[in-house]
Image (tube, rainbow, N blue to C red; front, side, top):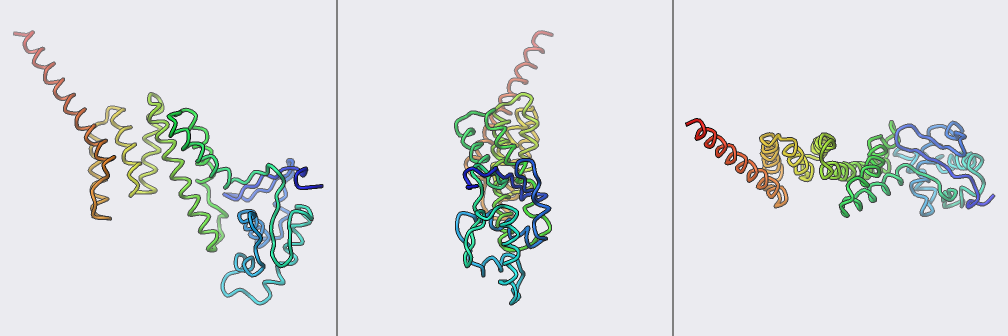
Length: 272
């Protein structure tokens, strides 16, 4: 059976490791912890062949034992039995080949956040919801939980950035949609600020969301918090974009105050 005609695989590496082929769960057949790590590493790096030394570095902590290279042989043999002889190519350098249309959660998250950002850029707010939430669903889970290695840390860093981008897209989409979606925008913006306190987009969305809910004073307070954070951490002022949101808030606040004063004067005049 060729890879093009082989049943597709569904692979989940964030949270519990799942390898599914036509409804059959294959991950219980992976050869232990190191087999699971080898499989995950080959999935993530399947765009190129990887030498055995690098594979050993990925699976064993420093210092790599002398027997590590030989220890790869039974692991690779077991992967070939599970996935098919054509799935694992090479001897001195190894490359994983997956069936056409296979699904890998970390890759799906990257694709989804790109779609969400594209819809936001086009002003298609409601069409940004689903892909931004799809990216969040993956990125909020831990990549290979319980494991520790430099390549795993790098994947977690990349997923962390995807999570922030997805939060930005979702917060913006729900803010611009308005109405019953405003609470979702406020929640997403608060989460974004908590995860990335120096990322001004979260503060901007939160200020606008709170103001749209009628909580202008709290929105102004958020701007003050942003100023303090940037001053203390970086010694800089908020960006022009953040200042523009603040200026808009203050202008609206003054207009409302002026309107209330005029209404009070009119009411007093009617009573005289």
